[in-house]
Image 1 (spheres, rainbow, N blue to C red):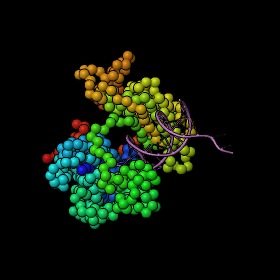
Image 2: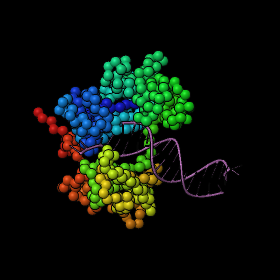
Image 3: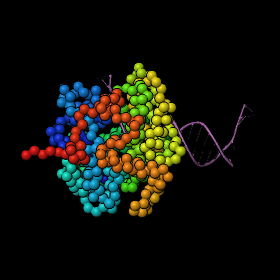
Image 4: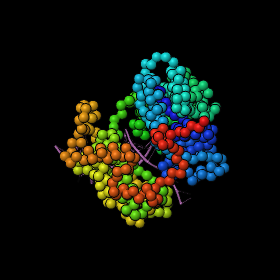
Length: 441
DNA sequence: TCTGGGGTCCTAGGACCC
DNA sequence: TCTGGGGTCCTAGGACCC
């Protein structure tokens, strides 16, 4: 038996905790460049704002309907997420943190009233953190996701599902007819794992509702559309194909990419940007005690600018040996960049990916002795120690207190073309002392 | 003017081997 | 005319997730 706990409109809800005046108003949170809407309050959804919709398309609603846009504040959301996950973890023996705002809990063999447990969890997270959640229970992960979808939708759109299923929904307690009715009311496109390409294909095959999909021949669909869909159908039928994974493996790739505030055409500016990305991914690589064997760089023009000549090259550079040294990674990234850059294009985006990651073996096995340095620190040139020092300095004095020259500090003072826009980011209330909430008498 | 970022898994096809 | 077959490994690209 699985539970799925999910924060409603996570990013907007986090903002509302600290700015209660936003409650009841249409609010969106914008992506890194203030480019697109990546979270919407129920009121914003009601205005017709779509997920990932460009801000410029809905900007007029700010004046006409009071739509409020906030720049993303991922530091705040990440911290609120950790707090929520810690609370949820106490409700079951095993937890899988699936994304920033949702987790699976393994309720197999748990005694007591599940629905009561679901409400207790919901109430605690609401009271302690101010975040509204929905909880779904069912016999498989896919069904638990469906249960959660029902819990949310029943709350948000009265009449869509029986109101008794709002907030906390346990599909395992429904009779066969009631369960069929829920599935009849749900489009296949709302099922976890069925996206914008597969849903129309299923529609064309005459499978429009979850009920129709559940009654389909899983093996035959699997042959036609792939093993992933086959598992999804089996899970809808009640056969678990996926388990709660409470010990996920280390990341297999680390990526940093951004769209630019304005197009970039010159190599020196790309060098600056790519260096900065490489520094960031290197830092994250060291944070997971990893090393990588290859670096990939991509730059791309904007596919939305139909009249621009398009160019979106990628280059992958194998490294002579596994490393987490910022200098080696920046050098590799810049070599790759120089190999793919062509003058005369208006680049709109760039990124650096670390590939073929490995973890320090002894570290992973937990057999490092106290004070023993990790394997990668034993390089004869002592670079790991330098990197550890750099990380410590930046931790203490702020990110980029110590940096690499090619990344340039120009962007701090001068507004480079690639600098991202962030017009209204809220304070990082819970992670920066200087930005902590001020209470007035 | 303005269109997110960071991940995972699966599949198809080519290279290579015996 | 017909031009082996089966296996592995690697990579690029696609689909999906939030």
